[in-house]
Image 1 (tube, rainbow, N blue to C red):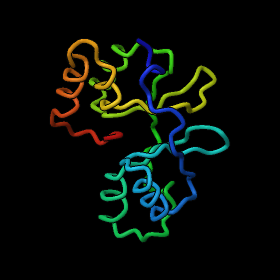
Image 2: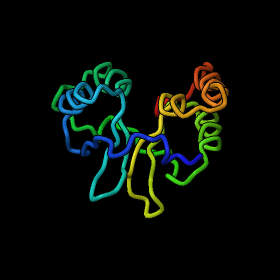
Image 3: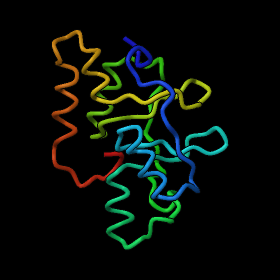
Length: 145
């Protein structure tokens, strides 16, 4: 099964110049702890609720701080035509719960999460359970969690 079969299509995107207040409100509206950051039709970063807490609030940044100052710039992603098992293994290796999904022109077309995978599991949840077990292992990384 390909990623496109179970990803969340057309995700909400914020811009690097959006304030962290606006991003937090957008996360609340879409009930997500993650937003891709796009500029000029390209994915340039990602921001999580943890980024807002650890990189912004804990460092004393105000609500009008541009998201570019706290976003993760090293974007890990997958392609919409990648095999779901391969992406689950990659998410496990990276210890991330979600990845942006790009088409082959490197345009954002969706987001894949462990939750999306769990709905597509036809193997009794083995794929998702395996990925989750690695994602929740303690790590010194803070990359797209």
